[in-house]
Amino acid sequence: MSSFATYLIGFIILITGLAIGAYLLNVPAMWIGVGVVVLIGIGVLSATSRTKVRDPASGGTTARTPTTPPNS
Image 1: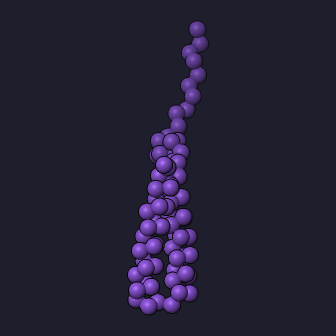
Image 2: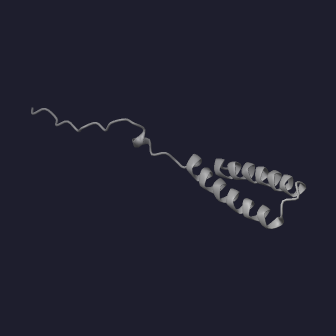
Image 3: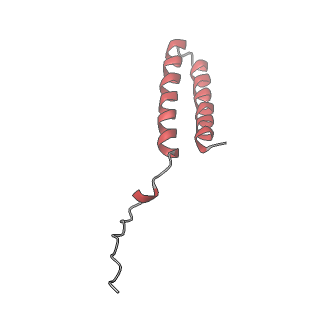
């Protein structure tokens, strides 16, 4: 399973727990739905930013300049 899927599964479990808690606190169902949609959007955005593949060249290293071979 990819780290993206694992992150999203964990986030969905968190959202489910928060939605159940809001239901037990008698929050109107419409606002629970709005909160769930917003949190799913935040979860997808944060999962993609945390699990995207980094470019190895952008790790702060400088590129070497090519050198010309010596004349023989």
